[in-house]
Structure formats: structure tokens, C-alpha cells
Length: 409
Ligand SMILES: [Zn+2]
Ligand SMILES: [Zn+2]
Image 1 (cartoon, rainbow, N blue to C red):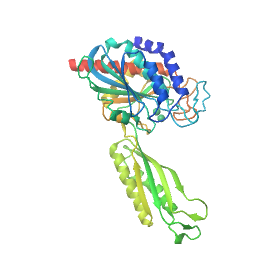
Image 2 (cartoon, rainbow, N blue to C red):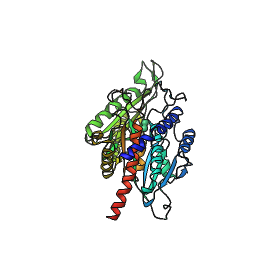
Image 3 (spheres, rainbow, N blue to C red):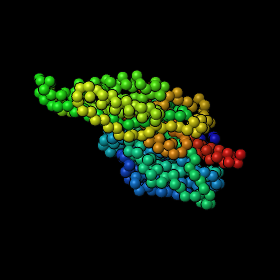
Image 4 (cartoon, rainbow, N blue to C red):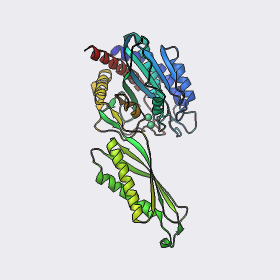
């Protein structure tokens, strides 16, 4: 394990250089042509079978090991966010209004590092490693599109043996943990995130004569309140939900009653059961409040990412490997899921695996107060990438070794 850590450290300069290039040229969504070329350039010369996806800028790269065995998937996301960067870093974004504020540039660079490290250890790999470079994590469903394009439908291994994908792992950097710490938990890891849109329709009129109109604004306000009561009174606190109405739009000026009021919000849950229950409750409450006031209410849900569920065995395995690579003191078992959402959920719905957080807080910052992911000021400690490269690699090697010994046993 020490040799592997040392190799990851030796790769750090290259990993940092690639990360800085990606950071300077952030791209959004599922079409990331510049990013893809940089990644392909960095992978050039490695013994990989590379598939360029056509529905997105996704890249699937397969490394065939020296011995037969199953395939393990390692995921990095490559997309950035639509905001102006205010870090003042020397390599800060050169694209106005776009920034790698979620650290996906570090993930991509770490996965390239792992591809280099594992390529150098090809002979000892018992199976294959599938490196998944996905676009569109930030709400564009890039991983679902890569799955639909056949990401997991791999041909047989080079020697003709069947080599299905039996495990999948992803790392995500965070400034909520000290550098080099790992956090994970078995079971629900991140929430589902659905969008909510409620349109309340009344009748417009003069603001001085509300009885001649049907004012949708008080109805909309009642719906906002009633939704919060519905959540706290009908959802099990140990299988929780968050419903936030984050935007209310109605009216144009002070003396007109508008015809409509529109509510927009987000729904977060950590189980599919509660996800369905909350949707039923929102529809019932919103339509019921509308009916009480004779207003029409239309409720629409827009599916976001499903719940990210870590397979319990895979999460325990990943925590064990992390303890070995980074030390037991730096390995945290999260007590609760995080209410953010993740595109990797689609992969974990198909393959048992785990997603882990990797601490990357700059040494002069406190994880309690450091600018968080998605902030215009977030900065990540690049030295954490050596830990990430080592951990990605160790999880792949151990996962495949474990499969071989399981089938031998
Ligand atoms: Zn993000
Ligand atoms: Zn992210």
C-alpha cells in the first residue's frame, strides 16, 4: 500500500497540471468538447480501449488487466457550474460566467491519475477497470445518458472471458472535511432531488376590489404554509424529506390582482418510499387548499436524480480500503445522508458500489467555515488529489482481488 501511495504522490505534479488546465476552461452540461480533448490527450499512450460516447462528451476507457476477472467501474464527472469565479487563483476560469465550483476538475484529473497508476500495474490486475468520465452531473443526467448508450454493455475481455461490471466507485471532493479525510456510509448517501412547480389560477382584477376578483396570492401563501405542515406531520422523521418553496412569482404592480401565482421548489428525500409519499401529499394539499378558495391549482413534478444508495457491503469495503490507504483516523462513517443529489445514483441503481467524499480543504482554512462546494470562492487543496488517486486505484485493485478470491473460495 505504501508503494501505491508513493506512486500517487509521484503523479501529483501531472495531476495538478491537468486539473489547472481544466479549471481554466470550464464547460457546462453534456457537451464538453474542450474538456474531452484534454482528457483524451492526457490518456494518450496508455493501454486503454477508449470509447467516445456520441450522445454526450462522455468517455469510457477500459484497462485490461494481466489476469482474467470481472470489471470494476471508477467514475469522475467533468462538468462545471454557471457562475462567476471570485477565487483570484492564478489559474482561475477564463470563461466568464462558468466555474469549476464543485471540484469536478479535480475528479477528472484524479481519475486520469488512477488510469496512469493502474496502467503501470496492469499485470497485477485481476480483471478490468472501466474509467467513466461523465459530463452533465450538475442536473443534466449525463450518467443516465452514458448508461443508455451502453456504458455497462462491455464486450468480453481480451482473452474472450466474460467480465461483467461488478462494482462501481466514485469520489467527490469537499471542503467540509480536512484534506485526506474520507466520509462514507452504507445505505442512502445522498438525496433524491425533484423539482416542484405549482400554478395557482384565480381571476385578475383591481386590487381595491378583491371580492370582484379571485386573488391567487393568498392561496399560494396558504399552500406554502400547508406544505410545511404536511411534511412535518405526515413524514417519518427517520425517513425524512425536505420541501422548500424557493421561488414565488405573481403580479406586476401594487394595484393589480394578477390571474396567476407560481410556486417553484425542490423536494429532497432519502428513500423512494418517502419520495412517492411526499409527491402524493403535495398534490393533495395544494389541490385541497385551492379547492377551499375556488382557485384552480396545477401541480407538476419534474424528476431529478434518484436517491444515491451505497450498497452496504461496498460501502464497508470502501471504508476499509480508505482506512488502509489514508489511515483509520481519517476515515469517517457518516451518521446521516447528505441532502444534495448525485447523478452517480443511476450507476448505483445498476451496479452495487459506493460514493465517497474526499476532504480537500486548503491548509489555511477551517472545514467549518471554508467556502463550500458551489461557492464562487471555493478553493480545493490540490494535495488531496494524491490521496484520491491512491484511493481510486486501491479500491479497483482490492475489488478485483476480492472477486477473484471469492470465486476461488
Ligand atoms: Zn455540484
Ligand atoms: Zn459535484
